[in-house]
Amino acid sequence: MKSLLTSLVLIIPTLSFAQDINLLPTSTTQQIVYHTYFTLSYSEPHEQAEWVAYLLTAQRLSGNIERSNKFRADSSVITGSAHSSDYAKSGYDKGHLAPAADMKYDSIAMKECFLMSNMSPQLPSFNRGIWKELEESVRSWALEKDSLFIVAGGVLKGNLTPIGVNEVAVPKYFYKIILHINHSEPEAIAFLLPNETATQRLSDYAITIDSLETLTDIDFFPVFPNSIENILESKIQIKQWFSEKQEVKETNTPSSGTSVQCSQITKNGTRCKRKTTSPNGKCYQHGGN
Image 1 (spheres, rainbow, N blue to C red):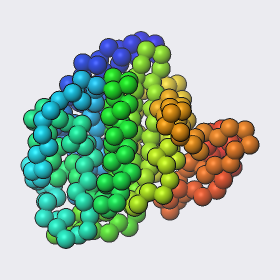
Image 2: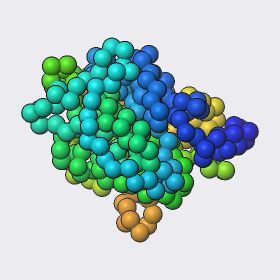
Image 3: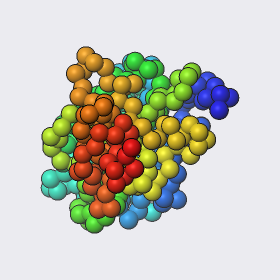
């Protein structure tokens, strides 16, 4: 385990392309598209990526490339991607999975992040609200921790409403996973957010990676041995990411006697509404202790 962590720590700070290291999630669609600075798994039935993965470093945030706003179809998607016109008069924003503000270090990165394969339909109040807040938090964490590996996407499950000629599915939920590999052990935090106006604090949407894997059928970090994966994916590591200055109410890592909402997902694809005092954030029916 120590040798694996050492090799990952050495590679991550100098990583230029997501595909240069086997940190990529599994693909349920078998259509992985490699761009210069991010990689995605494209779902043709939903006309969007089931995940987009990329590296973000503190150095990359010092760039000054201006936002392009030039949305265009992705010719690298062999089945054909969605078009910008699919979103016209739909009431939905073209929501970035890999945000433009994370790509301002390189003109190619900025250009490619406006490919339609990197977009998903998001309500304006969501895209410009809690999703933007999460993006800003990720950039803050990158400055603090130096190098992060990020995976984001919509939950492409269930009966989803389509928009446009190409019938782009509108996800009911979006997720984002942030991984930091340091010299002791990996740290990660995951979020599951409904595609609607947020009613809770950002930390309240934290969820275990295990729960997301069950919901999406994606193995997000298959490179890790079970000994690391079990620890990394079964816990909600609030304290490693949110400081006391942010006055975050740690509702997903309950202390003794504190009742919080269960972190798990029901068969209907919604978050369990049961309350729990279990330290692992799960109710009795989902394996709380």
